[in-house]
Image 1 (cartoon, rainbow over the protein chains, first blue to last red):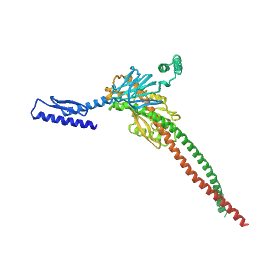
Image 2: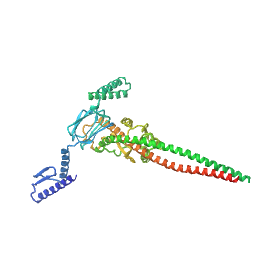
Image 3: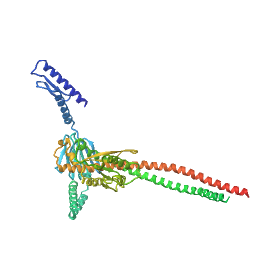
Image 4: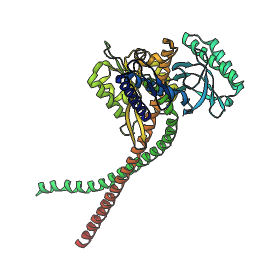
Length: 204
Length: 289
């Protein structure tokens, strides 16, 4: 914030000097320079008019852009009912399965909300290692300050899944689906089957 | 003369029996206080063990709570003003079990204050029998849902989901989860966690920056984040409860110890007095011969 203040003050000073020059007599010509700590926008260019508020806004947005651009940081949280995997950690990329289609999240992803689908989340950590985590259900939040929160009902690393146990779960869920009588029981069994199918796919 | 002795005799008898009785009464009382101390001590041990577990689990639940409420603060979701019939939903997170200081009372008091000012615009959901028992007598009509069988075992995500599912059946404009936030073994604060309805989320000023949203996604998102926040609040509540029970049982044991000391002193003194008196009776009887 301090640097922002400084640069906007500097820009304001620059603008004032430019206006003073213009007022002095070279009426239709203005040597306009707008520079900030991180970028030079104009150097002795001829512009029509500069309002200092606009200049300040320019500088602010430039700083915000710059902060976003070179920061390249992602505030990643992945928590579930049984375990916390990441808390405000910086990672490279996260691939998530959602009901609106699987997608990858990089730093500065457009803010969005999504519902997790049973499946595998792949987290590419900064050191070039990736971790695969199976999730049953939950939510994905991507905020405009590049923070990402994934909250899952239950999550486990894929390598700790047992394929045969997963198949057992699937067959049990399928038999439950076929024996379900009421509408809610059917829906519940349907969800169980979906999760079990994803579990089998992830484990094998 | 007769009338005088008639008055005196029972008095003497009474004096004697009372002394004997006090000795007996004191020893009974001493025994019961000792038993109570044993109970409070073991309760303290049990809750100390439960507390360590609850604290460990709370650490894991903290990112869930923070993550679930992050969207609401970042998207600047607020309760829309000036709705026609505002309904506020308060969810009291307590448990079935007492003997843990003022954890449940402080949650109930928070809600009672709210109810006193806002009256029947407030709907209350009580989790745990304690808050229901406190609020039921005066504000029974405001309670729309009561969950019990809470507190015997640590809360799970499934418990939270069940409450969230039931909650989603009711319409409300704004809401709060009232729970005890754990600070340290000896302290907690009663705080609230805001919950939002679909209408207030869709009216949020910064919702526009969020991409590819439809009503379905927001609805599911809200339901799940409600469960996540409830889970977090229940974990906080459970941890505060156990820590508070630990300290109050510790105090109870200490108080029982003090009581035992006093009672033992009185017991010994009384016993001594009885012996002395008996001796005096014997000696004076002997010397009278």
